[in-house]
Length: 184
Image (cartoon, rainbow, N blue to C red; front, side, top):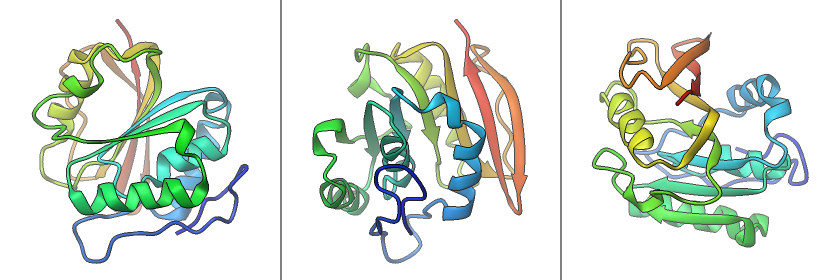
């Protein structure tokens, strides 16, 4: 796994052994960033179920201002911290160990608000709706923020909360990538 483009292009990222963490493949990450290319520069990024941190690190490499990485497992947090350190982006990153399904009080009213959010929960575990609900309740996003959800094609984007408007959806094999806008 490596950084695809930007200041850190080609930088190798460490990933977890085993099946607990499923990193987004380089080609899929590249496809997503090709779609959102004009929304990354200067963005404040939130990476939920961050795993290795590859998505937010890619965003920082491409000119995002700051990123917050949230995951619930000790191993993932350790790998994210190692990847941030090896990329020398410590001053532009914050790592939080937190149970996203419970709430997102750890980012409640964070300032400046996030305008680019990536959500990549474990597939087929019904984590999308709680993640979106808790994200909305955190009051940590700016109006019009872009939310990208990577999920199994067996899972759908919930209709509630209604503040998330599905604007695009792309299929990559057994994976769906859904693009939503936060409209309050």
